[in-house]
Structures are given as C-alpha cells and as structure tokens.
Length: 127
Image 1 (spheres, one colour):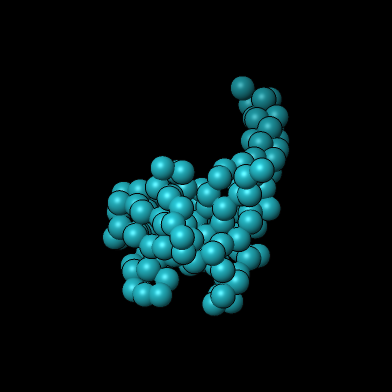
Image 2 (cartoon, rainbow, N blue to C red):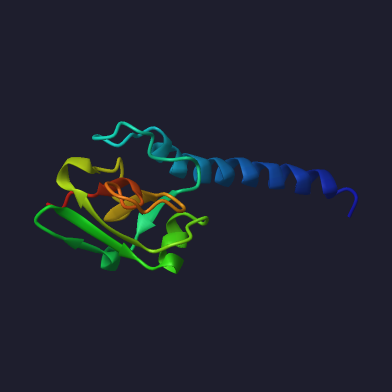
C-alpha cells in the first residue's frame, strides 16, 4: 500500500485540477458580467445559478421570476426570503452558453424595489 500512495496522491491532484477548475470556470462568467441598467457586478461568488423554467413567466414588461425561499436558496444559499420580481426587458441579458434557459443572480435578503431581489437575469434566446 505504501508504494501506491504517491500514485494515489498524483491521481487525486489531477482529478482536483481537472474538475475543480471546471466548477470555478462555470461560475466565472457570472463574475464578468454587470447589470445593463444599474451597472453593478452580477455575482459575489455564490449568488448566481440556473433557475427552473417553471419559476419564470413572460409578461408585457419582461420576465417574472417567482421563487419560494427554498427555491431561492438553490440560486443563493444565503437567501432568506422568496423572490417575486418582474425583470424589465432592458435588464435581461443573454448568457454566454445555452446550457439552461434561464439564470439569475439574487440578493440574500434585499427584496425592495426596484430590483425586488434580482441582481442580474439571463435568458437564452430561443430561435
């Protein structure tokens, strides 16, 4: 077993490098974006994620995002309250990839107007 230890350590380090950087890069694109209206950074490192399309509906003004507190925690683990926000068309951005239809970045507590808890919102264009 002691002869296999260096091989195990090498394999573990390779796995962490390959898959650890993949997770970091997956979140990295949020960090390089800003809300087009408010010009604030979209992500603080833990507050963005794909959202279930059933939580999103289209209105005349933009997309409406409705989440329970538990659903909000799937986007931002620190979220403490539900989200019910209409994101105006002027604030909606296209994500750099089309892995999911919708992505959101949300505050953990603030649900006040005009943002109603949504820092940034991304919708994949549908052709």
